[in-house]
View (cartoon, rainbow, N blue to C red):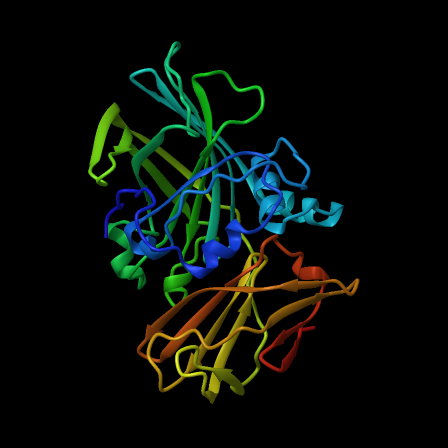
Length: 337
């Protein structure tokens, strides 16, 4: 599966993204686009100034917005500890793309880029919709077939930072593999990945929804770098049973859970149920050593030969060394010693 064209908001709003939109605290007005694989959740967000602090750091600002409030010193330290500096730039026909930094766990990654257009070009992501092809090797490209991946999710957030010139913009590329959490691919395994960006264009939709793409620059930017390593912890020694509710029928059923893995950005649960493609879980809380609680949000559900996989994400990365225990569907899962 090669890189898919990023799409403007065309479909129904998914519950997860709609919930994100209700959170306050965004200091910039991002334009978000998703791939066809996540079309049901596609939405263009334009959020005003909220309560969260502006850090002047793209990754910190993103998590503060998701969190809906200022980050603590511990949260800031956790984000920075997971972040690797890349610092690679390439120029094609006067358009320069710079990969600044990257943060990753097994199933998720955030890559920060800067875009500089030729002098005199106005880049305005608040009024114009930009589009391009994006690929990450071992994620959504042809080599994934040997690594067990059958799908992907990609999100692009393009915005202006304070003090940027008219020809500059910042991009946050989010890679979310919640739909393929059972695959063998590990984004944070220390292997080199190649990020490919191709053919930047300006997209317009008329009142009838007809799309027009105007090429801004045809060419390919390609960067090879290593995503930072990140820990993943298995919390189940043996299979366990939990109760869950089918969201369609509201019936409760017993579900067998065979694995529960925790990372700094979320959790993955492998389970067996008689129903197809449901997300039966709604109760995940991580209790930290200081007593604070971090809630996990369901982000994806997928099927495999052995059963199904449900993924959760945290609004802010957590320090795994400071986790006391995890509560999941009535189970209390302690951290391994």
